[in-house]
Every structure is written in structure tokens, then in C-alpha cells.
Image: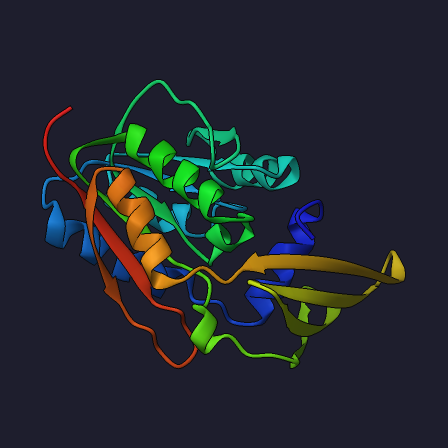
Length: 238
């Protein structure tokens, strides 16, 4: 899916993903902890759907994503906004930011607690003193569903997409198989599959990773359809 950026956008547009509301909530949290925040980095920015709204609220925004095709479309969607290709565990930019966000449970794609710590330490290296990290986790183990099935059919701009997923728990991770059936007026009908592995980190593992990054942290949530948010604030000076 992350090599099919336009299709990714079609699916989440059709499913009604409310990027505006997500971004407004995150912006409010950043302002609550750092009223003068002027710069923001969105990690795992995808096609730039959250970044589009952050760009209206902060003087300077940038994005970073691992998938080349997502970066390509984000750059097209947001001309003038720097979007970098990089791994959340070890990207290197030449500046720090007042706020760093990581949304849509992208952090769950890390494989273990060591990688989680590496990612938060990387965020910390790019965070100005007093800066804020807002991170949307994947589900904690005690709330993770087993044998969970989700299905959607959406039609956007004449293209119809059926998406069906089945998730099982294996050890400390969700293994999710997703099937897509895409009907396009020009390309006809195509079928492809994805397998996603998302780590079921404990709340304490997230909190320990924030501490290693030099941040005090609070957890907000969860909600019925959302795993909640972590809000970390960098303490001390450089």
C-alpha cells in the first residue's frame, strides 16, 4: 500500500479519516505545552494529509517518511514544504523543531522496544528545549483484539476500492492481512494484498522511551476507536 500513494489517499478519503480534527487536537496540545511553538516536524507524514493542516498553524513545517512514493505525493500535495525520505529510527535533519508529531499509529511498525527507544531518541535529538512530542501509539496489549475483521467499500472520483482486513495476535504483535480489490474505469479491476505487523508495546515501554529522549510524558486516552495520544515535553537545556 505504501508504494501506491494515490490509492492510499483514496481509501482514507473514502473512509472519512478526519485529518482536520486530528490536526486541530494536536495543535491545541502543542500550544497548551508550548504556546510560542513556531516549527513542527511530522514524522511518518505519509502523503501530507496532517501536514497540510499543520502548515496553516505553524510558521515552518517539514515532514519525513520512509516510503518513497508517499514522499513523492506529499511533495506534490504540499509545494514549498520540505518533505524528506528517512527512517524514524535514525533520520538526520540539520535543525531542531518546537514540536514533533507521529500520527496514525505509525510507531507500531517498529519491531521491538530497542527500536522504539531509538526512534524516540531520534525525535529528541531534533526537538528544541521545551519542545513537544505528540505521538499516537498502536494499541496496548490489554486492548488489542484478536481475530479482528474490518471491511470497507469506498468510491472516490469514479474509482471503487474494497478493503478487507483480518488481524491476529502473534506474540507481542498484531499480524494483519489486508486484501484490496480496486475497480478503475481505465485500469479495470486489480487485486493485491498487504501484510502489516504492528508491535503491541506496553504503555510503560512508551514512557521509558520518552524518558530516554529526555521528556516527561503524559498519556491521554484511550477512546473507543482510538488508542489515545502520548504528549512528551523536553526538559532541561541542550
